[in-house]
Image 1 (cartoon, rainbow, N blue to C red):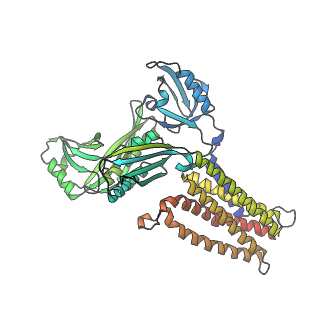
Image 2 (spheres, one colour; image 1 turned 60 degrees about the vertical axis):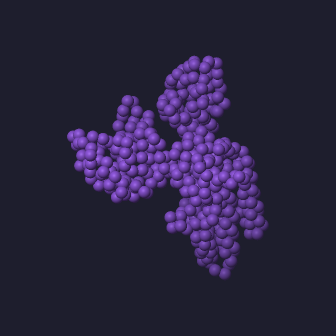
Image 3 (cartoon, rainbow, N blue to C red; image 1 turned 180 degrees about the horizontal axis):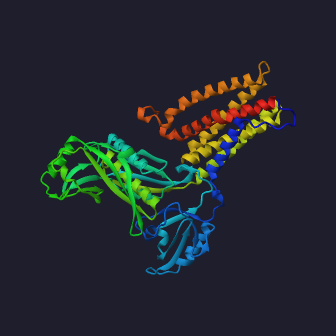
Amino acid sequence: MVCRGEKMKLTFKIWLLIIFALLSLISIFSIPPMFLKEGVVVQSVKKNTTIFDDGLRKGDIITYVNGEKVKSLNDFQRIIQESLGNLKENQTTKIAIRTQTKEIINLYGKDLMEDFSVGKIPPTRLKTGLDIRGGARALVKADKPLSDENLDDLIAISEQRLNVYGLSDVKLFKVTTPSGERLMGIEIAGSTPEDLEALIEKQGKFEAKIGNETVFVGGNKDITYVGRAGQDAIISECFSREGNEVCNFQFVISLSEKAAKRHAEITKNLSINGSYLSKNLDLYLDGKLIDSLRISSGLRGEVATRIQISGSGSGTTRQEAIDAARAQMKKLQTVLITGSLPFKLKIVKLDKISPTLGHQFVRQIIKAGILAIIAVSIIVFVRYRKFKLSLALISVSLSEVLIILGVAALIGWNLDLPSIAGIISTIGTGIDSQLIILDEAQDRKESIKKRIKKALFIIVTAFTTTFVALIPLTGFLSFMRIGAASAGLLKGFAVTTLIGITTGVLITRPAFADIARQIEE
């Protein structure tokens, strides 16, 4: 029993809540906190430019330019303007850029800032969606008129590729003009219009040739299996070459019987040069030779259905080379699975989306959420006449929101406006559950332990019902063809709500029950 003035006992459940709240703070702000870091973050770098070849990458934090400390975006812009502003068209000057991990020194011209962009360092590790953070939107048309079925195929293939490339918060949708023309819309959060344009204009056509003859192409017509895990898809080796790091990858594919016979027909007349045939198997992506594989002499004229595909990735560091190799391997695997895009695409409209309205809406939601928690806490105080209960309700509700945000930061989930609505929904269900606990705790007919147990049973039952109802909206059961209409629009709401109610039933509700029990005793 807790007497007046006696400190509350920190039970295991309360400690669990405290630990998860602290871990969530670390997940959101990192160590050291991101809001204390000085400098600017690189938002994009154009490939095949001098600054890219020198090693500057997206996500790097620039701390010094020409020996002068960069504390803010204004500092960076001022230093760059002083260094490059007076240069003529063909003049260059020495620029020294220091990031947290490297130093880049070279001669650059006045167009340096056309090759990369920078921004303020975000105060947290939380990622936000297109409607909050801003991004790029494009309307694209095919090289010939599309039927509804054609457009569905185009969206399905494009969505699969964009997801494999690791792009976050990708939204593809149908657009029909007043004249009846069918277009595809693409929105990508945090992306620049230039990045989106480069991505869209690639057709992704894969061909494997021996000489001028095509052996097989991407898609399930010629390819029956593409290895993507385990020993069927690996980074085979890494090494240094000419000052850069290079990593090789390899994965296996299975050819259809028809493609295997085509391979046998083409190779049967090739001569043998040592252990290999006289011609290589050349791999082309978008008409560009990406690799050339030697063919074992034992495969001449043989119907081989299992083939190994290899390639490489390079970078200034070993990890960058590994990441580049994995990205290239994923790209090849996806093109092999889906085949070429069925149409050549042309961008009709390309826009940059401003985050201003999203930020205003989020601020209003946060204010409304805080006011709602305070209002309910006042009502609880009036109803139960115990300030500690109101304080506990506020603390547990805020900690629940904190844990949701911590999990979102940990898994890299994009918080869009539906996700914010899910958090508000979680606050409502959380307060409702806590009021059930308080009401049961007030009933003096049974022991406090039995009353709390009864309240938790009600809460778990409600959790189970909500959990089952929301699962189809997440898209997690799409492989079973289980879903709901417009589920994509509600995915953010469903996922954040599921994170919130799961956090509640496993962590915050039991902790609040322990707190309420000790206050009542």
